[in-house]
Image (tube, rainbow, N blue to C red; front, side, top):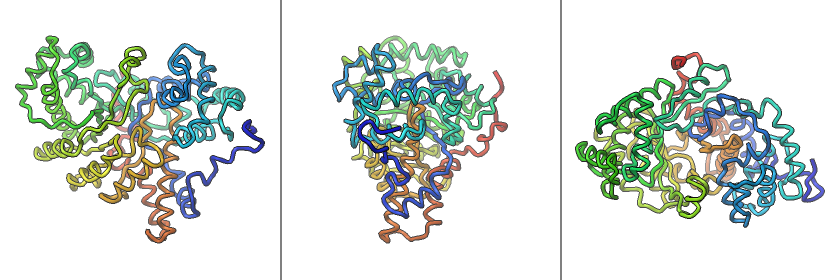
Length: 488
């Protein structure tokens, strides 16, 4: 294809993309590029993987549900009907194409063209003039088997994918996948955020009804509530789950007795919302409870901290949550994070943990907190997680790597995740790997690291895949014939 913005083919995404020296290029080519993907935190739909969804057009695979792109389109003055509204799929894609040239220096510009290249072999800048030809070429290629949901995971050498799942989920799609010979494994992640919401009885009580149905337990009091959650934790473990995840504004570590938590729970069930102080006490009790469950089963807990969500009230009411109206939060993090880790450590109930921050000002606070609670249970037991959300771009990734390297052991880092709802996101692993290789290769050429490419290359391979495989304890369940849950 030709570039409709000019007369020359696109030379933007080349073998040297983000690699600014020969050493970085060799490190990427010889050590990083061929590594499999272990994507241990994503929001992909297990149902779509189980049914091997086929995508009818470029909108469905590239734009559907993507609030990153919606934010950019709104910033470009595009009407909402082309983002979340009733415009046709093609109209929405053309509106996105008009926006892309204005995303220069936004990570969306890199991601968009990397995706077009890797999925559709399109070597061309996307803009209003090229959009129709790109739309037609991509749509014709979506008929291929390697661009179905399962085909994409195989195409990008994804060996393991972990989804994010509510404790009430039946995991029926995970069970189906565990009995299929699809060439990769898909595991659930236990995400019990709704169990903390005593301040929202209108949402809390209906969710507890779902929990009752899922666990077939009558939740008549707080003790039954805890039993139901522990039962679902066991159920998830039987289906291969080895990770939990929590999305919180900050950690909660306020002392709270079980009696007080039970009182707050009972009042919420009766329709009385917990006030701010009660919410903090209840959440603190529950987070310690979940920490103990994870430690007992040798799971890895993930903490995603600091996002300020759904701040545009009018748009949240009209469009719903998770539609692109979120910000970086600025809560004090270090004190409560360290207190939470310490409370579990005192009980010898601190699980392996990955902590992610959304505010770059917290990089060194999080990285140094991880160093306070390391021990021989696992190398890098407490991990400073990969750059997350607004930080998942070149500058943010480099800053996370600098803070981790300066305060801990980069060589033990478990690496990148997509944290995405889009099947178009797997090139973000390539993006991260190129940035990592460029950072280390540049320091080798400056004499700041030894010129031993085998040494540095082995560390790169560990970060790309091997560390996560070992750390998460997935070796024994990555083979489909091992530890399958019973057929249902």
